[in-house]
Image 1 (tube, helix red, strand yellow):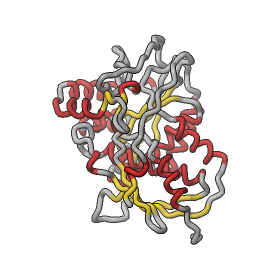
Image 2 (image 1 turned 90 degrees about the horizontal axis):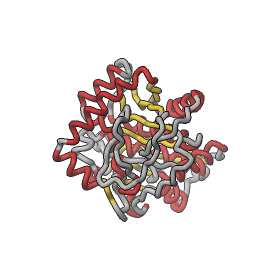
Image 3 (image 1 turned 30 degrees about the vertical axis):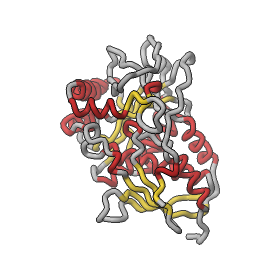
Image 4 (image 1 turned 180 degrees about the vertical axis):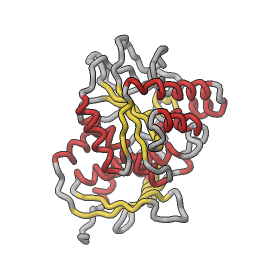
Amino acid sequence: MSSAQPDAETLHAAIAMAIRAPSVHNSQPWRWRINRRTVDLYADPGRHLVATDPQQRGLVLSCGAALHHFRVALAMLGWSATVTYLPDSADADHLATVEFAPHEPAPADFELSAAILHRQSDRRRYSSWQIPAGYLRTIASRATHYGAAVRHVPEGLRASLARPAREAAARHAVDHEYQLELAEWSGRRGTPDGVPAVNSPRPQPGEQIPVRAFAEPDLPDRTMHPDAAEWLVVCTAADDRTSRVHAGEAISAALLTATDLGLSSCLQTEPLGLPELRADIRTHVLYDCAYPQAMVRVGWVPTCAAPLPQTPRRPVAEVIDQ
């Protein structure tokens, strides 16, 4: 490996792009540490959403997505990344150590980097336009480079995904601790984290697969025609912490690829936080061949839809340990 290393300005720029990654309730549960020759990524247990994400699945997925964003940003800036996963067996929060080598950026590096700046979680209904099958294959193939798979859920299996999604929504509606946490982390106005009210539409009755409902939704959603959204499940062969980091990277690759193709997307994990509902999806959607880690909804927004407000992020200085 070359002795050349990215300078501090380059690393700060890459981390600034990395923290654009999606995270559970926009909690941004990561810490970065810049060393002389490496950068370390840590989960931030202080931002663990206990009621929403009791097993820290979403927390680790969020960090994995940020790690992939970091790698994409580095590639655009002229550096490749070699990652060592869970390098410290005594510290489960130490998720990755990244080393660097010079890299000649390819057109795809610039395309995915641009997608980081344009990707947003769009929870509104999508249009009736069908997604070409080739687009779904492209999204799935990009994710396989990171130790996870993306499975398209065809129409015939949608009921098997809808049933646990509806059950999760019903359970959470009467879960006092969950509702308190949801109120704390959504319906936000003017904060650098959490789900902003202006990015949350009201739940629409009659949806085949319901999406998570947030507090004080204030995003207009006037789409009335049938929604041709497609659903994907990100899954892994194993179910350990490393597999969840890989799944987070695959989620990022899938979302950025969808954005690059002009699609909108929304990450969904609500039923996967409940063990028996996650097992239901594993059995009836994935036929016990893989472990579901996240669901992704993709589609085309209507041409009349207003642009989404930018989702806020914490300042870079707040997520870097000196």
